[in-house]
Amino acid sequence: MSENEQIVATNPEENKPSALSKVGAGIKEWFRKRMVAIKRKPQNIGFVFLFIVTVFNLLSLAIYSELIVYYGEEIEWVGLMVFVNTLLSILVLVAYLNSFPKLKPINSKVVVTMEESGVKMHVNLMMLAVTLAMIIIMIVCEVFYFILMKEGYQVNYIDNNANIPEATKLFESSFTLTITHIILLGVSLVLILTMPLYRKLIMKVDTSIKLESATENMQQIDLQD
Image 1 (cartoon, rainbow, N blue to C red):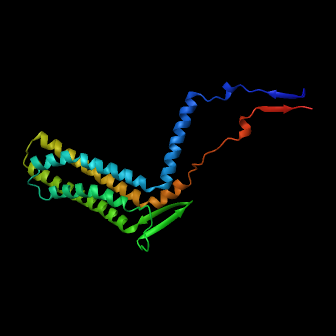
Image 2 (image 1 turned 180 degrees about the horizontal axis):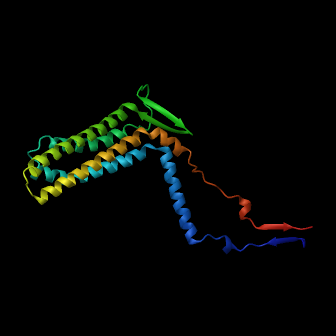
C-alpha cells in the first residue's frame, strides 16, 4: 500500500441495525408479503369477509333457536327463514371458492380472464352469479325474519301487556343480530361487485424489494495524489 493511499475504516457497530429496527423491518416485510398475496388473489378479500359473516351468523343461531323454541313457535315462517339462512351461509362459501378457479376451462364461455401487470385472475361467471344470488336470498330472508318477528312480538307480547323479561331480551338481541347480519351481507355484496375497481388500486401498490447498492456498504477509500 502506498503512502498516498488512506483507508477510512468504518466501525462495524455503526452499521449494525438495532433490535427495534429489525422488528420494524420484519413487520414491514410481513405486510409486503401479505400485499403480494393479495395482488395475486384479490378475491381472498371478499372470501375472508364472507367467512367472517358466516361465522357471525352461525354463532347467532343459539339466540335464534332459543327464541323460536320458547317464544316464537306461534310465529309462522321464521323457522324456515333461519334454516334457509343457515344453509346458504355455508353453501355461499363453496360457491364463492368455485367462482375463481385456478385454471381456465377449455372452451368455456362463462369464464373471463382479466390480466393486469402480469397477474391473471379467472372468473367463473356462472358460479359468481350463484354466489350473488345466495347473498341476496339471505338478505331477503333476514328482512322477512325481522318483519315477522317484529309483528309477532308486537301482537303476542306488547299488545297483550305480557311482561316477560327473558322474552324481551331474546327478541331485542335477535333484532340486533338480524340488522347486523343484513349490513354485513350488504358489505359482502359490495366487496364482490367492486372487486375490479379496488383490484386496480391494489395492483398500483409498490411491493418491490429495494436492494441497497453494494458500494454503500464497502469501506470508503480515499486516494490522494
